[in-house]
Image 1 (cartoon, rainbow, N blue to C red):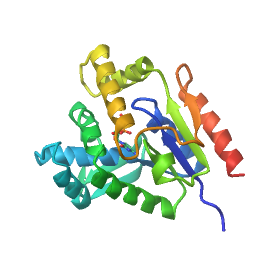
Image 2 (cartoon, rainbow, N blue to C red):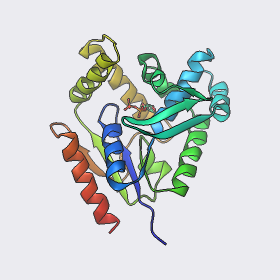
Image 3 (spheres, rainbow, N blue to C red):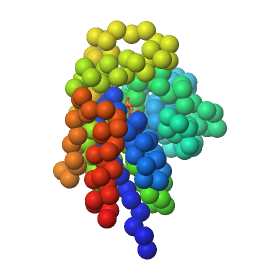
Length: 225
Ligand code: CDP
């Protein structure tokens, strides 16, 4: 039986994971799963339902009841549906970004979403990006990457995305928001953002997307030869 390729890409906010992961998946003919979009979808639902971000119990229940669908094929990645509604754009709004780490630190939320992610990966070859893919979701993946870049570089990249979405925010403010999210992701009790011991660490500062993708393609082909 042909071994299905599993590629795990973790790293902090704005490191370019989703752009690289999508291109890598296209090159290798694998399915791309953006796990961050699932945490974002639950966060959006919590905002819509006016659930307090301190109410772990209710947020855990919410994660268990919402229906999140990731539909592949979009140029920029997956289209995301939340209870049947297309929320692809809405989950990228700053209000969601600024609350998502509060939702992602709740153990019951993680348990539920991790299970859904593992179920998807059980049936097909995937490139998954997130924070705990190499450590928790796909610990047996043979190809694991931890993609990072300086905070200035990451904030500059994210600023461009936000400007395209029509948001006006200063680089300084964005740096502090991203740093705050990184700190929460790195310090939470359950599955914090840390490189898996067997991950290849790539600092993408000063590298082009194509250079990063090329590095990864070579490595994946090597380990799955
Ligand atoms: O795209 P960006 O780097 O801004 O973040 P994302 O991948 O959309 O993830 C948003 C947030 O979801 C992260 O800051 C984490 O709090 C959480 N997340 C997580 O805890 N575990 C994952 N596997 C993916 C995302």
